[in-house]
Length: 326
Image (cartoon, rainbow, N blue to C red; front, side):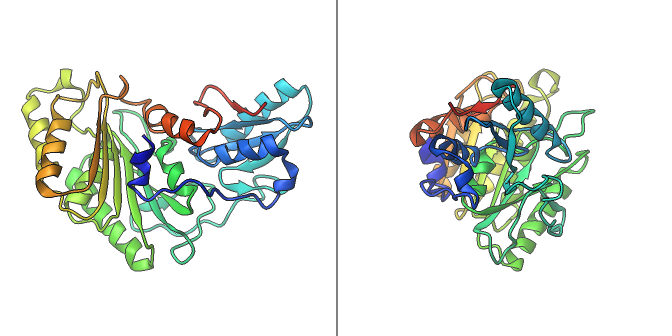
């Protein structure tokens, strides 16, 4: 699985050291390195005994849920007040986390910067990773947490933006606007732009690539936009539209396309379609079929676990549990 990310330019051997590194013991420093590979919203705290806790994948307009959760866990374990060390990618150096909020960069077309994230801008960032969330009827996903794959890019210095769609009524229009935003990002000076998305977000990322978005990489996880198979009147439509996308993408960007066993949104055969299309066109791609049986809770486990093992880092938290050193 580690090869998956190497293909998308991710040498992960050199994660950034913190400017307040001395606050952490050796074990805490290792835990903080693992923390840098967690998805926002996230928070990292340490106790008087030097042991640490982290919390990640928290949804919301800001990181307050992650902050509250990590401090509660840390203090319950330590039986003493804990110190908040970092929130998202901002090391606090004893500052109040709200006062330490980083400056907000401007939108790029329909893309908006991830809230409370220290983006560096096109001149100083290694690139730009754009997260596109999934969509569920009747639920606003615009404050949902990005999945874990984005952290492998941000750990290497990529800025993090979001392509949010509260309502999805115009698929071609969304894809076209994503193309326009990527072109604008490249014109601003971002050296590399990668699209990542799940479900509806994975679909629109591939659709934008088909329409000529000048991207360097795409991570598409459980791409879908026709709803669950049980509700489809004609499953051939979903299969045909998928085939049009994968056959139409031209060589250039590097792709990772993932689908999951027993995915209720999958009409079947799509990963075979992708493999055949990319082999015929010469598109550089990794196609991963049926790694785990789920549609929504996927990248945090399927795309992270094996790489964690390779890097010999501690296991990662899900939304319901914290990551502890010690």
